[in-house]
Image (cartoon, rainbow, N blue to C red; front, side, top):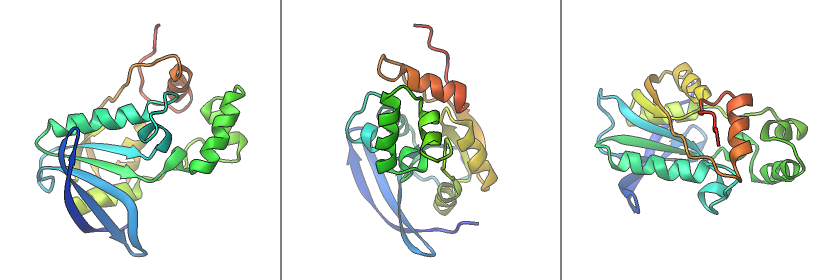
Length: 200
């Protein structure tokens, strides 16, 4: 059982609205993962939550080969419109393989592999992420009953297995484009993400 506690918080005005940014520490010291919090989430209300894994290429550089950056900003907009909400920003680059290996996976994808094939070729599983720390962060914030904004059923299972009650899953779909249509189709057909079939 992972145990974390809130370390510090400060106001974070963004282009989507005002949040509190919250840092945490565990038994081994401060975490690199943070939460953006909107309103009072330590209630018995069902709290909207986005569990977002870091994607520096999409979040920071605006990569068009994935949907991550757009999902991040869509989620921030949704939470800014809500009275309460949490966005967990987890340092799990490349589904847990890290940026260096993610770039290696990009190279393999440029040669014709899909994202799953590339990870397996590099000696990794499709997805190395764990959601125990994310669940502990939610528990530290007092958010135990949530509405999870995700297309990934493994996030629902991971949080529920760590003691969070996911009352509802809300889709967070981004319209496909030429550069990421194959990527999104791979998420749906090989990784089990609940994404509608793109008929275009």
